[in-house]
Length: 99
Length: 99
DNA sequence: TTGACATATCGGAAAATCCCGATATATATT
DNA sequence: AATATATATCGGGATTTTCCGATATGTCAA
Image 1 (cartoon, protein in one colour):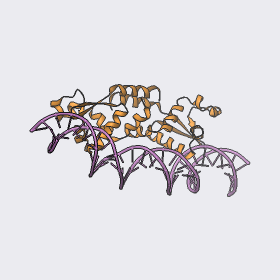
Image 2 (cartoon, chains in turn orange, blue, brown, purple; image 1 turned 45 degrees about the horizontal axis):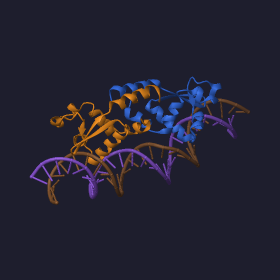
Image 3 (cartoon, chains in turn blue, purple, red, yellow; image 1 turned 180 degrees about the vertical axis):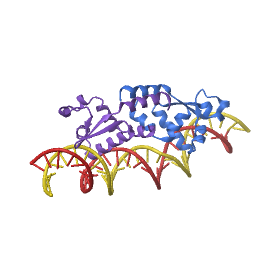
Image 4 (cartoon, helix red, strand yellow; image 1 turned 30 degrees about the horizontal axis):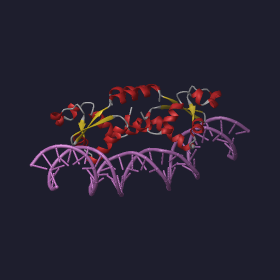
């Protein structure tokens, strides 16, 4: 777990917003309902809600993934992103005791 | 507590390093011994150890203070900085549950 | 294979951050 | 008041980040 990389990933309003939305996919991305939420939410849904371009959202999600805050799952032509709660828990403990 | 401001403050190797040093002033800043550590460590001590210029360290400490991660105490011509553990605890809990 | 759709990557302009040297301010000493 | 010391602020070049449009890649359907 790269502290600095994580904090950089968290240093952006849009990325924080996305992470927050992913806490409750059912509520925040109802349009995806029919496809289920097991693997997370696909890029297009997030892009629509974020109001940023497709390329920007894709890059932001890659940034979040590289830092370990989310995981990506490719299913057909879609890539689903979901939170990696283990990293959040580890970060919380790190701040509590190590930083 | 401004999340984004805190994460930005934590997104820098030198600032993370300084915060870490301030966890144990006695060990990391022994030269200050005769003046005590009650109010924290003065800018000059931190600057020396960080190997950055005085202006840069002063600005970094101001950044950390504005985010609430440290507090500053002016005593004579010195400004002492110490960690604000309440903010660290609050941030840890925030990450655990709210972000 | 061709076309449609979802996502990733590339190139870059604008804004922010990094970190410096120079200078200003505040305090203490003589 | 003049000098010395500690810190803060200013101006700016270099680097990084932000976010875009254009383009490439990958997958499915006809």
